Amino acid sequence: MADNRIVYFDNIRYLMVLLVVVLHSACGYSNNTQWWAVNDSNSIFFDYLLGMLGVFLMPTLFFIAGYFALPSLHEKGKWLFIKSKLKRLGIPWLLGVVLVVPIYNFINLYSRDYPISHLSLWSRFVENIKGALSLHTGFITSPLQFQHKHFWFISLLLVFFTIFAFLHDAKKRWITKERANSKSKVQTTKSILLVLTLVSFLTAVITFFIYGIFHGTPNKDPWITVASLIQFKASKIMLYISCFSLGVYAFEKKWLQQGKAPGHFLLWTILSIGLMYCQSKVSTILMVNFSIGFALGYVLMRTFLVFTILLALISFGINHWHKPSKVSRQLSANSYNIYLLHMIFVVAIQLFLLKWFSISIFIKFGMVTLSSILFSYLISQYAIRPFPKISVAGMLSLFVILIAVLNPTAI
Image (cartoon, rainbow, N blue to C red; front, top):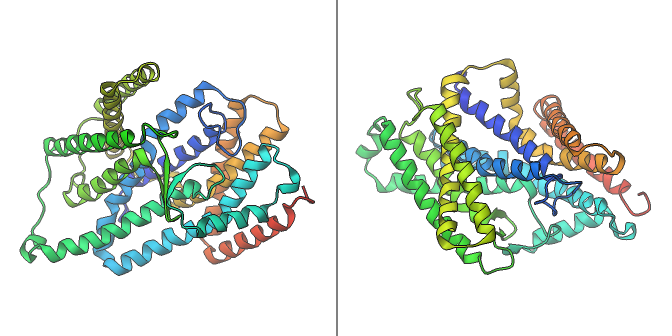
């Protein structure tokens, strides 16, 4: 601990955010993301990179969010807790879907040589607002349909926090004061691993049934929107719920408060590599010859892989990454804003490199990743954090200027 922060969790969190930027930068160069705003030349390398990063990034962030939810709720109480989350998550989400998503959609069309006579940022803004106000519930079937883009994590996390606050309040009413005041025993490694195994198995089984529900549909792994307010991938929603809930449970049961990790970093790393290899082999088999047994095995391996990677990260963090440094403190303090800001830089730089530079996509990928992280960090560190209200006013002003400039006659 340092300054009432759990340093290794802060470090893991900013690492996950930086890897999210890496993932989104790679989307422009993968064969599996033809829907991405800017689709350049492709390489199988980025297919594998996306497949690997997509397994554990968001589940890890949900786990960490859940881990810190309970102490925050205890400190603030239900209503102040919800109010603080609405302010920290709800306002950035609203600004993002109103200001950033139309720009993303504009770039999507511009990169695909959409007719100039039909292309304007104002029209994208209007269509986006109409889509949001439709309060649609169902599948997301088009890249230009109202979407939260990367802000889906913010809205879903806000819902998780709100539901958790009400459930915890209800729990306090049901249990006796004696039980409420009793101290939780420190969990043994064996009991922690047992809980993780049971949760992994249950999560995998429910996820398998979700896959089965959509197996006969054109999109076998759809994104779902609920009243335009939350959006999530159907096959991953149970995993996110499990990871957030496990985070809460881990704090309540003092899994990590003794400064010891369950298992060794090398053990979890070796298991993760083995599961990743087996998963890729089973995936190849399923593409050629589908069977229920192999499909269930794939889902089981993928779910267990999430938790072996999570345990590897926690073990490494506790044993080797628990001391603060100037760089880690700065990145940790700005990680949330980097997540919020990075997407617009990613797609804008991808578009710039697509239109005017015929260079290796690996060089482009590196330029997109590093530039997006740098620009997001600088704006967060020197604008948003010291001057939040002025920054919001500046974003609104810039958006109005872009609407005036990005119209059919100006392009």
